Image: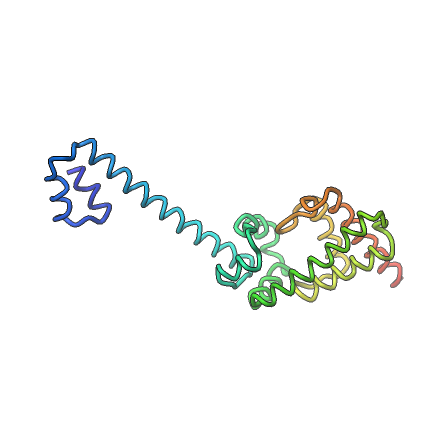
Length: 208
């Protein structure tokens, strides 16, 4: 009965099960090994399906309404499911997160390609400024920080200078969604943080 139940669990019909059990060339151990192999294959298929579903749910929590093929093209091997839960736990109840989600959920693959190109350009110029020894508090670096702030405001959510300061703190703590700046180059998180803070201070002084 146990053998029959195992095969039924594997969706074998009763006629097929009867033929298998009637095969005298197979020992009881052979049948157990075969059932184990079939069950292992099923488990692996189901685990693969669960992983695909997890990635889809993670993308939706991040407000990314792209097909898996489009996500692969735009984001490459970035594991969105690793970012979704911590980001949602930290910011999910905030108005800015909800605003970000509303905006990004409407973006096409082309929109995302443009956004990532803009981000990459700003980050690359900040990295070059750091590597060439331009101080984070210089006009050049502050202008790049302002460009970053306006990019966030245009593409994701309202980003006044206080909000930008808060983002800078998260960058310094390596809590950025996706690849952290220090993963790109050691010290880049501190440099971008300091440039953002200097830019916010400049804006405050200009309006005082």
